[in-house]
Image 1: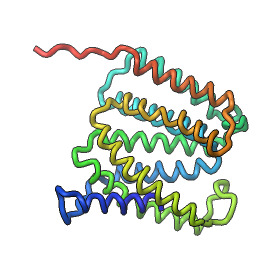
Image 2: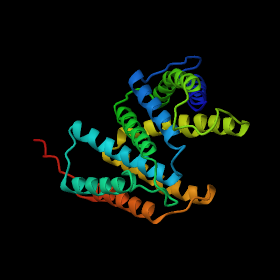
Image 3: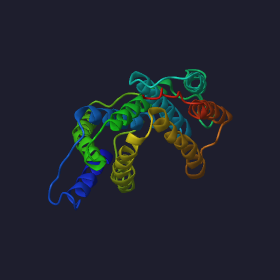
Image 4: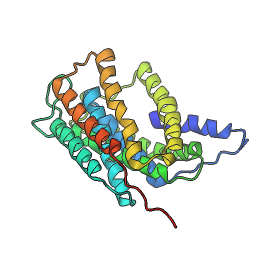
Amino acid sequence: MRITSGAVVLGLLLFARPSQPGALRLAGGWASAAALFAYAIAFSLAYVELSAGVGALILFGFVQITMLVGGLLSGHRLTRYDGAGLALALAGLGWLTLPGVAASAAGESAPPLAALGMAAAGVAWGIYSLRGRNERAAPLAVTAGNFARAAPLALAMLIAMLALPFAGWTTSSPHASLRGIALAVFSGALTSGVGYAIWYAALPGLRPLSAGLVQLGVPVLTALGGVLLLSEELGARLVLSGLLVLSGIALAVAGPRPVAPAKR
């Protein structure tokens, strides 16, 4: 529902653009759509077992790591500040996610499989974001195309999960309420579809490290939302792990950048 509603709304917006009246021109590609789908399914399954704050911290921590590695592979130099910041962020994530050590916001152990699933979601979103930096087509057309390609993948996964329930992920028989459907459609149409199009528009002007950094405010907002809206407790382990991760990223970004040699 979330991915399909995003594809529909983005398609309608693309169709209605004054610059292309009556023409629905999709861009994007299957590789980006696969990364989008992998993020969505891993995110959805992992959050069944994780609190809001812990899930967001794991997710965007691995987004940052993925985008940093992607930047290195594409030729960006890693300074000592980047290295120190990455080590600090990894220490925070490791403290939070290692089996037997990880804790949720309420102080309970976070299921290792759920933590691994959220880490996979972070890697997938990092790949999706890195691919967006290289897109030359209009962000709306690219995002619409990616959502349209991801929709049949999500439908196939839904059919598979209804036919063969995944042990350990579900605690009850499949069901859908009107409120749940409305939230899924709203999430897909606006916060996902339109929001991701805006994100793709911003990406070309950001370094991979900076693009990862701007997303790290999300865990703080999510943890706060979990406390205010879901009655979750803000445990000391989550707070300290979050400070380690955010401090590491701040160190990497605030440190001096390598100066390119002057052209003659």
